[in-house]
Length: 486
Image (cartoon, rainbow, N blue to C red; front, side, top):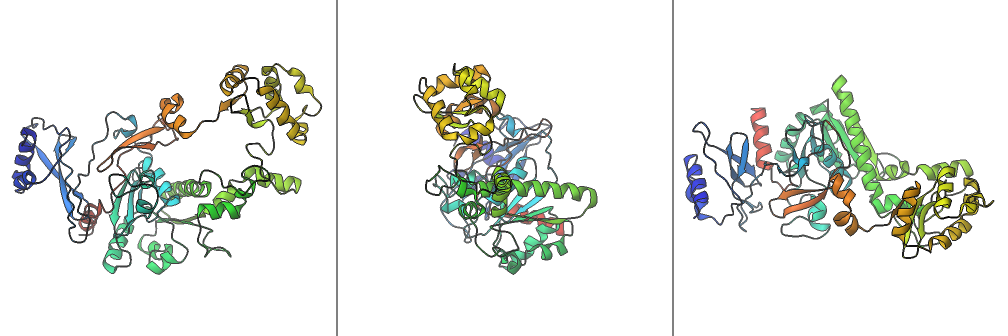
C-alpha cells in the first residue's frame, strides 16, 4: 500500500474505524495529496453518495481533496452497488468552474420532476447560473434519457443524459409511495420552483399538481411543460418534438420545394419550450422577490414552435398565401441563402440594397445590380429562380473558401457550411469563445459538453457539478430535510 493510502486510512480510522475497511477494498486514488495539517487539524468530511453508502473526502482549510471512488458490483438493499465520491472540487483549469464568482440565481431552489429534453434543458440553464437544482427521479430507472437515448459508455447513463443534466443533484423517490411522497412534500416546503413535464392529469393523480403543492408552499413557482398545453382540444394528446413540428406548421416550410416533409434538424419544439419556460420561471421569480407570491408557469412544445414562426405568420397574414418550403432561402429578403460554388456551397446574406450592390461589386459584375429583374428586393423575390441561376453561374468560378474571403473583404456577410466535426474540433472561434467545456464524471472521466452561450460579466456561467448518477444525492438531501424538520 502506498504512503498516500496508508495516510488516508489512518485519518479515516480516527473518525470511525474505517481505515482497515479502506485498506481492504479495491480502490483508486487519483492524485490525492495529503498536505500537512494547518493548526494541527485535519478534518474529514463524509459526503452522502449514491443511495446506500457514504464516501469520504479529506478537507483541509477550504480545499476538498476527494478520496477514492469505490466501486463493486454488489447490490445493496436493492440499490445500485456503486460507491462513489461526491467530488466538489472545481476544476482550477476551467474558468467556467470558478466557484468564487457570484451566481445570479443563487438562493433559488428548483425541484426538477422532468425528463428527456425540454424540462431538463430548462433546469440546466437555471443550474448554470446558480440555482440549486434537485432532480427527482424514479428509483427504478430514473430519467428515461439515462438508458434509452443514445449510446452507453463506461457507466449506465447515455451521453444524451449527460448533455442536459450538469449542475444538478439526483434524489430517487417513488412518488407513488406514501413515505417518499411525504419526503417530496418536505422538499416542496422550502423550494422556490417545481418543474414537471408529465402528460396532463398525471401530476394531479400523483398528488403533485399545482393546486396541491401551493397549499404546502403558497410562494411556489410551478412550471408545466406539455405537448399541447393543459387546456384545449389537443391537451390530452401525447407530444414529441416531431409531432409538435408537424402540427405547428414548422415541417410544412422545412426542406426544399416539392420534397418530402422534413423536420428541422434541431429539436426546436423541445428547445424552444425549454427556453420559454426558463424565461417564465425567472420572470415569476423576479415577481416573487417583490411580492412573495408564487404562480403557475405553463407552455407546450406545440405553442413554442408556433411562437417561433415569426416570418411565416407575417407572410400568411400580409399576403394570404400559405408559406411553402424555401430550402435555405428567406421569406422576405434575397439573396439570403446557400449558393453553389466550384466545390460546394457558400452562405450569403445580402438582404438589403446596400449589401446587394456590394455583393455584385465583389463578383465583379455591378451591372447585375441594375438588372430590372433584380433592382429591388421585391424584384428579386419575384424572379427568385433566375436570381439564383445568375448568382450560381458566377460563383462557379471559385471555391467556397475563396468566395468567403472575397465577400467578407467586401463587407458582405458570408460563411462556409461546416459539419459538426469542423465546428467542435477545428473552429478557432468556438475555441476562443469557450463554447466547449468539460466536466469530470465519476464513471466516464472527462466529458465534453456545450457551454452556455449567455455571457454575463458579473455572474457568469459555471459548471459546479457533474451530471448526477441516479440517486447519488438521496441520502444527503433526505438527511438535510430531516435536520430541517427536526
